[in-house]
Length: 198
Image (cartoon, rainbow, N blue to C red; front, side, top):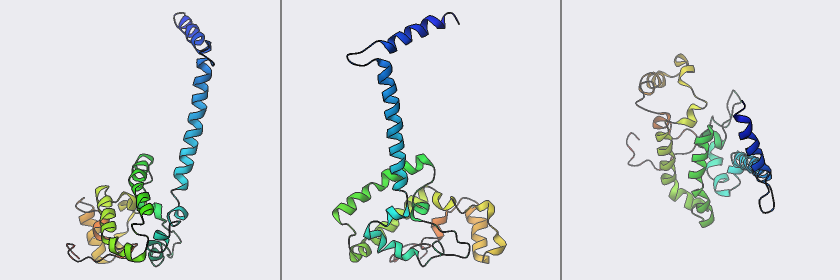
C-alpha cells in the first residue's frame, strides 16, 4: 500500500498541473462529459432512425412497400402483434444494428439522386432491391426473422403438413433459412422469372 501512495500523489499532481490554460484533470473530466453527451446523442439519433415513422417519411417507402405490408399478417393479425420496418430490416443486437445502419446509409444516395423516386423507377429496380435483401437475410441466417420466430417454440401440429415437414427437417438441419421459402411474406414479389424454384 505504501508503494502505491507515492504513485497516486504523483498522478494527482500531474492531473492538477496546469497545461497552457487548463489542468489535465479538467481536460479529462471535460472529455468524459463530452463523451457522455456524444454517446447519448448518437444513441438518440440511432433510435430515432430505427422507427417505422422514420422509414416511411420518404414517399418512396410509404407509397410502395409500406402500402404492401398493410395487407399482410405482419401488419394486422388475430394476436395484435405487428412487425414494423425495423423489426424485419434491422437486427436487434447493437453491433449488428450498427453494421446494418452503415450498409443502409447508401440508401441516402438513392434518395438524393432519385433512384426510385417514382413508382415506375421503383418497379424497374424492384427485383434488384429484393435480391439484395434476400442475399442479406440469407447471409445472416434470417436473423431478423428469428428475433420473433423461434424454432424451439413452433408447434408443428398446428402447421400445414407441408410447412411442418419443411420446418422440422430442412430448417432444423441447417440446410435452409427462413428467406429461402418466405420471400414474399411481407411485400409483393418482383418478377421471379429465372429464379430457381419459382
